[in-house]
Image (tube, rainbow, N blue to C red):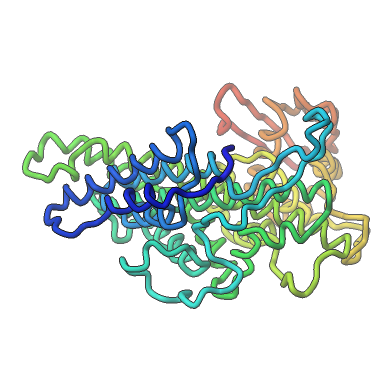
Length: 457
């Protein structure tokens, strides 16, 4: 992490002068000038020995190139440069305060660079919110409304609407979303780490993620629904389309270079994959924020100013509960073991009666069941029948299978005992003979080889 020094105005003006498009009539020359500009920024701020952080003007120009989406080459180059600059000159970072002590003992301190450029403008509800995004304002930071529009554009792409393999704008939008999620992550994680030590909720209240989700100009639930739809459905039809484009390329020599260039197909598939990963990361950050906010609420640190927002896990459960197909796809593609298990546990909790409840700020939580506790519920034939009657056999099999998947390499069930190789707490969970849960879970390098059977006599 480099320190931010004074900006050399002469160098800044010379670099920005490269973008002067006056007198340029050829599109290739226009793109070449932007590639030259990006290289000049990298040379002055990353490669040089005495580097300094770029000015807000230069940051904004690089960001505009990414949002322009003129070509795949420009989008990739600007995206990579922004990621490198964020790594070299972070806006929020941690450091050990007391230099006299060893790093392992010195307390961590949070540093927020107030003057640093940011791709977001949140909190003040910019007057540009709700305004149509045009080429003239592509260099402006993203507000909550523009972020929502970006996600809606990606879901249209996933649904196959307005899709063209040769249009670099779609690729640029996916890269733009990935970059914005990385900015949200870089801002949130250091704040959350300090919050866990200090319990200072203000640090998270001022995070970009919290301000984005708390904006009144977007529908939080609709944003989450769009994310879930993209993650669960993916871009499978587009991957097939891309493969077809590659196979058909040699048979159609009259097509333009961009349309039958195999690099487009490979880039598209990779970008779709990375976009789905970024969407999952976005959801994971929200769930971590919800977890910290719940703790702050228990300690009486939140107020009406923080607003009321339904925890993400509850929103996900609402969507999954009434759509078995969505539940299946979501569990197959969602990779984070911690939150995947939490979703499975809370799904079961909805249908397992609890003897105790908690008040809003009680220190005793009823949401502390483990997977072992859920399995114990299936040791009672009456409880098992009740659960299966509410959620169906297929859903019960699916949830238990993925629950075992996250717990160990493999698990198996004999007539009245469940065994799990890696977790001693799940061994020897008995099932009544009159209503048994047979579990056959095989890892063998493929997490999808899962089978759970219920059988009642």
